[in-house]
Length: 319
Image 1 (cartoon, helix red, strand yellow):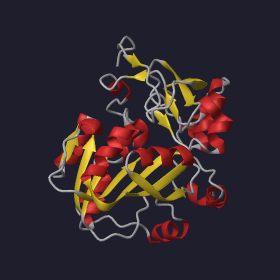
Image 2: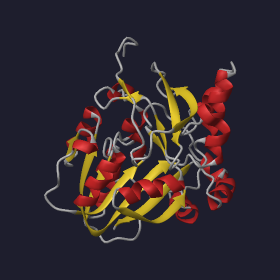
Image 3: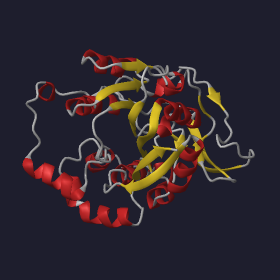
Image 4: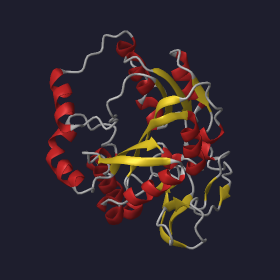
């Protein structure tokens, strides 16, 4: 993409209706794709919600989601999975159960109707369809949504804020690392609340800006992901935002992983002028972690127990 691409920026106030008083916390840039632009993160003095401001508008944010954007490729359905031949190794299944490494954690529910927001190329909706769920998705990327539709799944292409109402309500709505990307999370949550059955579930994972990672690394923090992440939640502010949207949090699971830690160190070393192979391995750790997270589990377990890992999964129900 050309660096001459014109990005429209907009100033936005706190979506919870607070007075327009903010503190500027940091200024950063796109480290994932190295696309142009500088962006500041501010914190509302009233409610504490952090947001990227100013930010790219809804009609120009797509510049920061190129076709090679990592999550689009990471959610492609592998052919062996499609043919039903894929089986996880027994030790990996056991470790996931013991260590709860599967961060797409769900409460025990009978199969029903499920919507995934930000479904990317469709790996998770395919997984849930195999378990008997009637699935649908919403995805901003035309390319990624086409991958999911090619497998026969109904996927709306476009932002969640403008998605049409479903014909039938959902028992379950999930969104893995997506709420922080939305321009109007309150409107989106209210729409999802309307689309859900009484007592329906909403399961979301988001970066945890209330962890030591954010306060230690600041603009080097991998979970910052500017400018794609428009909001930066803590356990307290995610509770407030969901409440405004019509949802009540049942539980917050602090994920027992340290994926953010290593690329954050890598970013800091890179900015200090170190760009050797070791630094590059740190920066690409989330994509190439392999079996390393199992070794780091004891430390991740301790940090998760005190709410200090960089990612959290939220269970909420329609109020």
